[in-house]
Figure 1 (cartoon, rainbow, N blue to C red):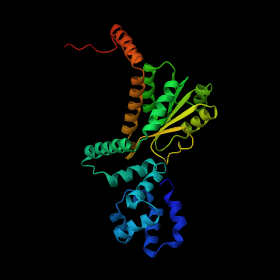
Figure 2 (figure 1 turned 120 degrees about the vertical axis):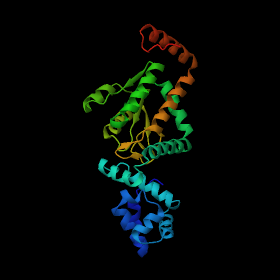
Figure 3 (figure 1 turned 180 degrees about the vertical axis):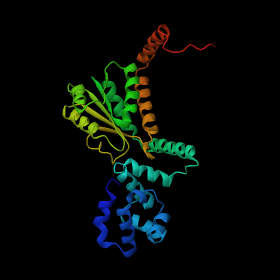
Length: 287
């Protein structure tokens, strides 16, 4: 359900019972905490039963309490400061078992991404990249590593890839000012979303390029800007973002592009192996 739950609560508040007003008041004032509570914990906190919380979610139009909690989590992803993220993480993660908690969360994001991603949109993205005149890739702040990884491997496979570097605002536009119809612009961003990436995507779209967004879900500001959006789940892990699922999605894009041109793939890496051996790029290990 793609809507702001706070706005929905305000809209429906005139019809709430006394117990529902308690729930709505707590969510409105403490959405950063409520978003990660179970129905039972939320009910206990505000002094109502778990079943009352579940009914409240249903009456708001959500598919049970899990649906409402997801809506709260989606809403806050771009609102929490780094300090608030740390506080949320302290409530959610057992610091005596951080390794299991973080790796399990990453596995969950990979599983959810696989279940929910649109295969049609994925294939459309691959087609557009392969048919592009020039491919521009932009990822800023924490998404810079994703853009660099994608740019590195696409540069090995294709001869028309341009990685846009996050320097000054003016230099970003100077690197893409020749973009036009027939080009592809790939923007990558996760909460807290980079406003410069979104503005660069808007610039590319206004020039007639096909814009592909790699982001976390339908609540992302990429929706309505990008022609094709590929969603890979991310989540807050204390003060940083989990980018495991986005990296896996980018891996899949690169592999799909390579496999669509098998002759070029083999010839490219055969040539590269010769260069790597000649210039000792990799350490030679004794067999």
